[in-house]
Length: 449
Ligand SMILES: Cc1cc2nc3c(=O)[nH]c(=O)nc-3n(C[C@H](O)[C@H](O)[C@H](O)COP(=O)(O)OP(=O)(O)OC[C@H]3O[C@@H](n4cnc5c(N)ncnc54)[C@H](O)[C@@H]3O)c2cc1C
Ligand SMILES: NC(=O)c1ccc[n+]([C@@H]2O[C@H](COP(=O)([O-])OP(=O)(O)OC[C@H]3O[C@@H](n4cnc5c(N)ncnc54)[C@H](O)[C@@H]3O)[C@@H](O)[C@H]2O)c1
Image 1 (cartoon, rainbow, N blue to C red):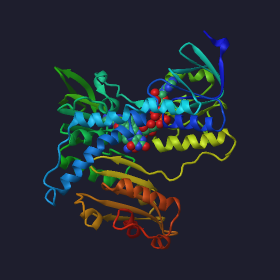
Image 2 (image 1 turned 180 degrees about the vertical axis):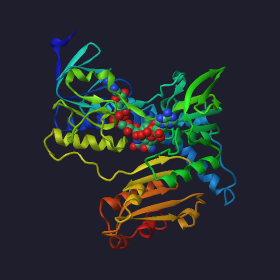
Image 3 (image 1 turned 60 degrees about the vertical axis):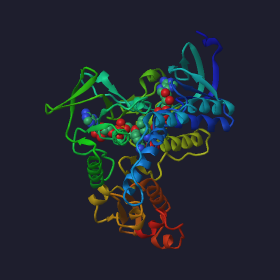
């Protein structure tokens, strides 16, 4: 052990995903001596095997979906997706991420280390056989896919495998009706595979508006995806080169690959948190309202915390900005999230922000929900959208928009427009006093509010 020559830092950040990288860079810019440790790819989940590569593949899917809608309206036919070429396009982006991210950190003066960090004492970690000391630690180790504990679980593949497949198999099964399955099932289907999505109860995508989820499920089924609700897998069997998923009701489905889409779990086991007196649970690292753990010199941000908030890239970034201000003594207020939009990129896009429609319905004295089928509106007729639905939640006490749920291929734009409206408490009168580029998705906002 080289413990006697132990290098000392102001902060050591563990995990170089969106949360950790942002925290390390900002602390370094403030003049601190900072080290970051990563045991896999610099950049973490989002740019290497999460949001960004998923949306690179989705780019081809969007093109195909839009062309299918417009077929017969000036477009001759929808293009086929060439999977190996699309994968090469994605790899052209992802290949540069780990090196570029690490170079950026090094360039700004952050010491970068490769390996798995584990605590050996309150102020000390080891990576391999090297020890490092710091005044403060930031745990930003993220999540990994959860694997259902059923016989044959070793046959499960994950979103990470899917996003780097050399060849798309003929037939796939996605288990679990959450973000991952709804997004990847659609990509696989549009790229030509036969796809089954099985979910164990009647309420997939439970963070989103129930009626709009039902409509999305119908749209997926109409497009040819086999979505099965109330279907619980009990076992996976290998049958020749294929895999048979046995369901609780005795039925089974056979395919070339089976993917786990049943949530993600915190990367905490390797950290030996007890050595640093940091408490944790199944849900992740326990943090208080200042993102501080049970050790006052250890903080946690991003997916790995046990906070009941959406686990998303912009939130990891937001937490890192909050924490750096807190560590630098520039802020003493408790951590609080602003209005957060959430979105699923599937057969169409499903998004929501602010007060949910379910919460609004449960408090009908306080909230009104406007439910608008906008398929016939100019913006959606122009592109021959099959389904376009917008729900707007209004606070009856002041007539302000406080929530929205959108089901349409424009949801990614529209939901961010609603986010501004809600965050800035913009009144209908104020909105009417603005001029939007027309015709556009944003210019419709004046009609919704
Ligand atoms: C398929 C998929 C699609 C997604 N799509 C979206 C999307 O469209 N929009 C969105 O906002 N979010 C999306 N997400 C979620 C998003 O990727 C995460 O919320 C985000 O990456 C969290 O950032 P983080 O920094 O907390 O953790 P991560 O990005 O997971 O980074 C943590 C890093 O810590 C490293 N690490 C773990 N343990 C150790 C250790 N002991 N020592 C050293 N290093 C360690 C890991 O290797 C990893 O690189 C998606 C996720 C997946 C899986
Ligand atoms: N567009 C995005 O923002 C995006 C995309 C992908 C992933 N993500 C992030 O990654 C996380 C993980 O995504 P995910 O889809 O794996 O998890 P998830 O939590 O979104 O969904 C998991 C689903 O699996 C179901 N499930 C649980 N046990 C099951 C069982 N035994 N059989 C069948 N279904 C079962 C759950 O009811 C749930 O609907 C998300 O919560 C999100 O934080 C975000």
